[in-house]
Image (cartoon, rainbow, N blue to C red; front, side):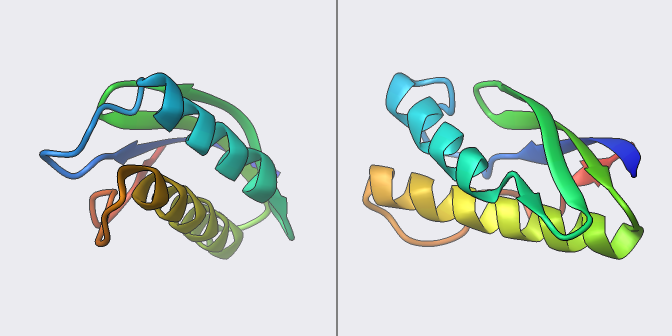
Length: 96
């Protein structure tokens, strides 16, 4: 598995991710979606307007699908918390 550092930026004008309730929602989403075929969330840091995620993936496809699933699960949890609908994260994540 190849490690990648991924950054996912929050869209503008949304509440801070470091608020306790938002952190709890993200943590629950990460626990539920941390591992799938060829993808694993190893470590994460929650900042006010973005996330840093250290992930391992067996391929570029596994990285894309794993991140897509993790960010969708996280966005749904945050939208439930914030009682809103619509996109939460910027269109793309950045990996290194």
